[in-house]
Length: 266
Length: 149
Image 1 (cartoon, each protein chain N blue to C red):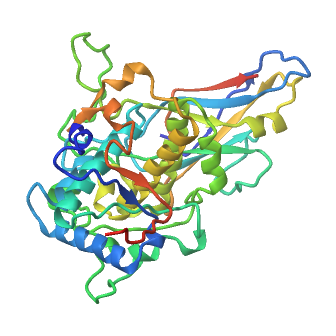
Image 2: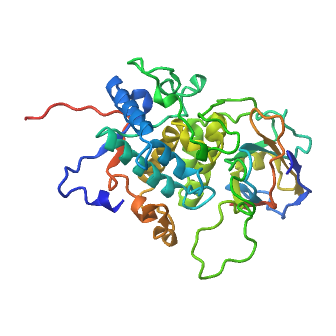
Image 3: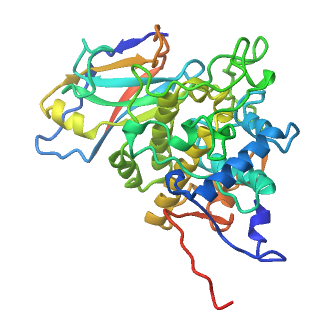
């Protein structure tokens, strides 16, 4: 992540914005789908399956859960995955799934549609799971079982506001992780297990929402940070430490509900 | 592993009648997360609560969710959590399956269901694995009530 801090060098230091998947323009959604499709087509260590496999299977399982590194590790994970997508489609960013809204709709339409607007298979609907990425007898493609009998309800805006009101980082992180867990449980199927969840494309939209809530918390509680003892902790297998994840803008991105622009003087 | 837990009577320290509780937490220590993902629904003073008890029941206090590992995918011993204290020179991260601590903020339910004069309370935990036929996934060491005010 140190590379992001050097973005003012030979490159233009333009901040990229992550957006709500529901407010993507048709062109933005098409670009994101193109990036996922291209990533899924690559079988080497630049491709989707490699990135998905960092979280869980194949072993080792690298993600951090029930850990004080939960938010920083996943911020780094999203950052490097997003960079790999930008290698395929420059400028593309990860959208977030706002699961506090439209509960009757379930998963976002962009992730449920069988086909994309151009008639090609929708890459956000699922992904293959390689043999090493699934347990014995596990499915070769991602599955979902949203809102199965007994599933916890999706979080509400009030739930999110309650955790945003917590001023201590570890307290906030612990409660936000539990909200995060509930969404994994609600989606079910591949998303319901640490070992496989990142193969489902909805994983990235869910975690982008979690990362966005952390960003909102940072804006609300300026000066509140993880304990000093955590700041130098490594976030394996990624280069960088907790300290490197504290500023999204230093990493070259931010969150925007909408973005609009007009041409300048030229 | 069980699908339901009812605590013994938890002794409550004497409280001033007018003391305001700013926050009450139930903290579950030693929670296993090696298996299926599940929701753990928590009820105060409702020892008969079960999976059919709705979340809008007056004794419902909140829940926590476990995002489980889904089983062991390694060879024998892969998922055995070391029980010996770490060597001070061992800087490897902790084992993935070190049991979790889960904090559930239950302030409103505690105020509603536990009077200052009450000497004990009980906690019932009901585990639910969505869409599954068995729910024997719950295992933890201790539950502790913490109040702040």
